Image 1 (cartoon, rainbow, N blue to C red):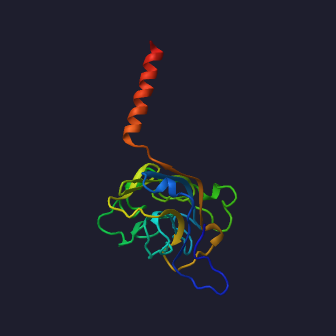
Image 2 (cartoon, one colour):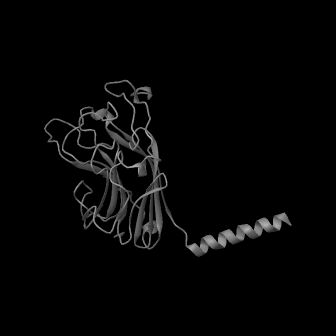
Image 3 (tube, rainbow, N blue to C red):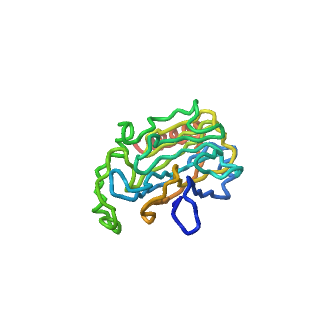
Length: 238
């Protein structure tokens, strides 16, 4: 996915693209569920600063009902965005029907590169010049800094339990909304917060793989299964 790429007869602008899977009603309606997928954020170099217009973000949402497109500044449902190269003063953003980064949504620090909260999952130190295909091509060079999530695969997880929505990256809690509007589908996306266009759009994109959507079992079911397995092990030992 890519956004805000220069083309003939277009105007640079903040923009976004989203993917909305269909046929999930039986999984989402009336159930607690989990969305999980892998994401790769690519950035136009050189790193760590990035080239012109390099600050773009991946997006994930629940409760998207089709009323509005998910764009930067247009809210529908509950969703999270994180930049690939940490180039914004607010790299982590949450959006809901009520607005942007509203009170009531518990989020970690908002600046990836400045806050050590993210450095365990985004340690940096990736030599872009050594990457296959793009390393050393154009301005694809330099080394990523701690807090930059680009140039590595990361696990995205969204847990929807009751009215609560929690967003995780590599099992680190990024944000949670205890009173979310969950009516609607899920959406994955990629956006550009700013109107400036990438100076090398061929290297400004996000990749999504291994999308899974599954119901979260009731606690009683988990307890029953755990007891059943323990009983089975006990019998085997005897």
